[in-house]
Length: 264
Image (cartoon, rainbow, N blue to C red; front, side, top):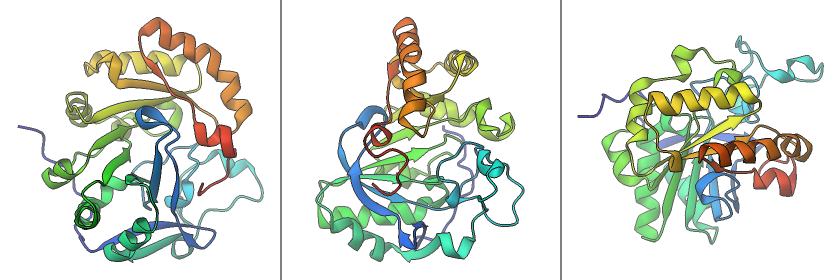
């Protein structure tokens, strides 16, 4: 029997959605990372996160005014924490579905923040979209710290599990949930993507792989970087590491194409 899921939002009618430049962050692009890289997809970016990565490039989903969390941008005198009411919107599931239906793609990526904090509303969204077209397929981008409820597990097609390493500045007790690691390691819908910046990150990935018996073919390594230059510095040695350890490599296609631009 799988471990008991951790508490998440129980509201099935309303989703907390990220705002970007005043607009709901629901957009049509290509999946830029991991197993589905290159597939045209509609992205739905939820707000809120239960982790607080120091290098997060979507910190407008959680780094609210008055919170104590550190971020690499703190060194920038122009950087400010985000006003929650400005950067987060509460939307009905029906409103989100209408926006998704306006795009031609039938692959939907539920991203964040941490989408699995809002499982009941996401299940309602998936059911509603499939009522319009049974061809809809759903991926969720998750940090691998929350277990899915049974109805979420039944509705989702693919878990893109991106566990956070020590480089994220999250305490181990928060970022590494043994029961959740084991659940996803054994789940045929789940694939792991680790963000790697240096050799010690790779060593940590290999330890986690051994500790939780994660099959090599389920692991993608991705270079950390928000610019083409940063990706280029790390790409070559990381590809060699994938060859050495029988793991898979993923780039960040959206960064290669659009740089650090959001909502594309």
